[in-house]
Length: 587
Image (cartoon, rainbow, N blue to C red; front, side):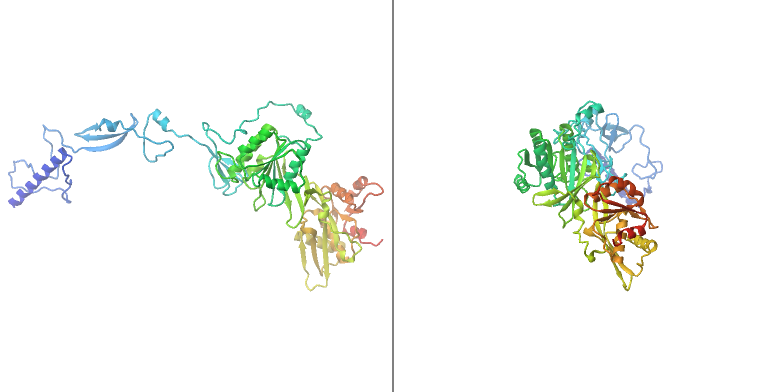
């Protein structure tokens, strides 16, 4: 047992010696601090009780000698010093805290401009912070549906509720050089002008032609004739007012020239240019000083310094804004061609239609040569205007009689045309005459009703009123209704024409040629007034019709307008029975 105690004491002496050397010499190999995994315990000793236990282990810490300082192992740590604003490495030894070497203490953290540091505390002086401060750029998120803007991105627009329409638009910083906007960035500086002075500067005889400083957008399906229309408009302005610059981003100058040759355009004041760079386009426009600028199309041009490719939401918005500022500054009207999406809307952000002054849509059926030019937005006039054109080899030609699109050749002597009546509908400010056909088949095994171009509920109501109020036995007849040329009859002004066509087919009595019907039918069989009745009747008279069936209360006022030996006869009726007695009688 004594030998075991001596071996243990020698092992402890060797361990303390190696530990002392490891502290004095950093290159000396280190030993682990904890040799035993068990808790500290006191070994028994055969030494005298009064002899101090120099080398024994004890569970309690042994107090240090009075004449010696505590032997503590040094510890190194890095802390943030708020006084100096730096990270400082400190060493704790003998109860005191000493800083590391001056070389380490003077080392300052470095950061590149534009870098981001997360989770680390890096202090710096005011000058150092200003040196690594990066430039701030502002971005705005704009809804492509309604134009609502917000500084933060949202999945759903707060104004219109559309999902996924918030698009990011980056703006230039204050100190950064702005490119692509040299011509259009300078705002128009002017002083307030009296309204009476403005009236004196406007020539009412031709004010609708120049439209100084306006921005017009023309949209339509591919191949409907947008480029042809604006090329003809450019030629008319060049012949009547002055030079016009026609810029195309889709075709070369030679291709535009070939189209102009087919349209027989020979004016020398029309200049052609092929480019997609807005800076180049505005530079050429400033050099020529044209009376009008035409761009085909807004989806093909781009602006330098703006993110995104041509046709993107950001490019379309910024290019249109640049052209708007150019138009307002130079008083040169700009006409734009815009593509449409599958839903029929102008391609690009919805805010595009808010920027421009006029929005026009060119529409046309696939198998028809007629084109309709509708006004959706017009800051200079009414949106009820409607242009009707016909596509031919020489371009788009105006149609003097739009109703010829929906009227067939009259053959009133034929018995086969029983069940045909003419209605008058309004589309914008234009009145159109359309044909309504009806077919009543008696003795059919089951009562069937098929309608085309008429609302089914509206047709059922008119049929029920005829049965109840006019006394016609239509219960066991199959009834078919059709509107000629695929037109949809949505307004109530065509009710009387539908009723007249059904009565004509059931009675097998053709309606005489030259009669038109304008009235709404009520549930009691009465004839009611409709909107713009006077304009409808005037259109019927201009097309050479001899008689027009209208509500009784409008007969007197309309008869006073249409007077003369060759004037159209105005026949007023109170209900369906009076209409049947007036029309389906043999003279």
